[in-house]
Length: 79
Image (cartoon, rainbow, N blue to C red; front, side, top):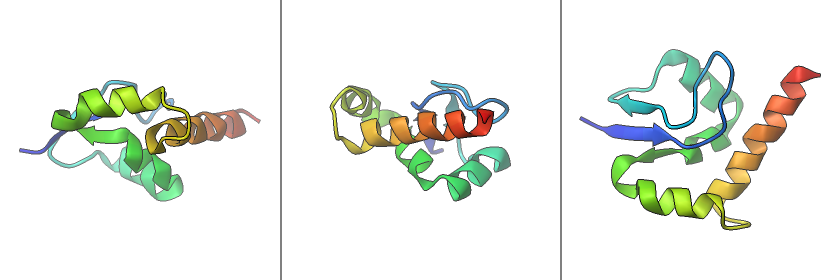
């Protein structure tokens, strides 16, 4: 079975940081991916987890930019 982990910021009612998924993603997360495609960059296979977490702190990396896009999305929801 396919195992992956979400490494982005928590999105209330959708996903928490470090949530592990086995098999298919839940519908609520798929809906967020449709609305905010960069979320897909933060759902990483377990075998790529170490490298992806390192990339979160690398300015300009896909993971870093995606993480900040989710943060910006969350700010927009509060307005």
